[in-house]
Structure formats: structure tokens, C-alpha cells
Length: 195
Image (cartoon, helix red, strand yellow):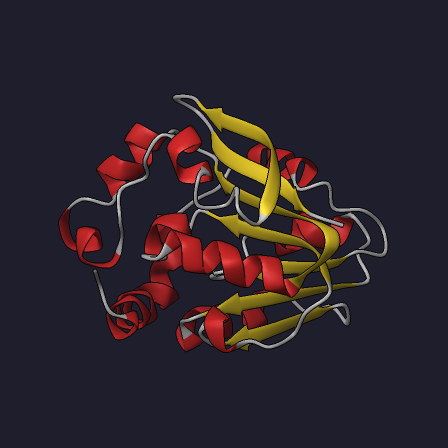
């Protein structure tokens, strides 16, 4: 297991160069947000939002609000510099310290391996969602690519992605899982909270 301070330090150190190093296909971002079923008027939680790579696409769906939470203050600072919208709020915090609830959608995009306790994460996300709310874990690359990228220094702050059906087991006590994909180009798990 890794410590929260290790994760924060890793991303704080890289925040100023993150967008130059990590690029995202805008069509894949649109697909991710579509999978999350973000609807007009929704309250959206972007977990481990980093520099706000999903913000433009989320805001294009006309939600009531988007809360981006990230452990790294430097990543949040980058997100704040890039994005200004009255519907958008950002918070540099450990997700487990955030008490806000009633979200319609919670998305973890390209960050799931950095949460060591998957069942605790699933329980926290469930507590933050409104009844019937949807969660989505998504990577716009396949599991083997993600696991390969998390070798080296990133292995100190991440756990390997397991097959999506295995990962979904941590979420099943809290959600009705209704979508899973584990292909060379896409990885996601999604479901809804009981009403």
C-alpha cells in the first residue's frame, strides 16, 4: 500500500507540466462523459480531476454544477487557471474528507489506480451520490497500456488495474453495475446507486 502523501507529492511535483505530457483525445473525452450520462441540470462530481481535463466536456452538457476534487493542490491550481465557469468549483482535498452529498454523477477518469482501497472508495462514492446516481470509472486506454504506464516511479503510487469484472466486485455491494468494458482501447465500469 502507498501513502496519501506520496500520491499528493507525486502529482504536485508534476502538475506544471502535466498537460504537456498527458494529452487526451477530445472524442474519447466526449465518449467518457456520454457513458456517465451527464444530463442538463445534474450535479457532477469529478473525482481526482487533476488539471480539469474533463471540465469543458462536462460543462458542455449544461449541468447545474461540477465539483472537481483532487488531492494535489498544484493540480487544482492548474485546473483553476484553465477553467472559469460559475457552475464549476474545485477543491484540493482528500476525497474521504469531502462531506458534500447528493451528486447525480461521479466520475473517476484516468485516476482509479491511485486509490489503494477500492471497496472504501466505492462506499464513499455511494455515500456522495443521490439515490439513482451514476458512477463511472473510465480510462480512454486499455488495461495493459495503463498498467504499463504505471511502472517505474508511478508504481509507488498506484495499483495495477485488474480485469474490469474483477474490479467491479468492490462496487457491487453498493451499486447496480450495468456497463463494463475491458478492451485494448477502453476500460470502464459503471452503475447506479439503489433508489
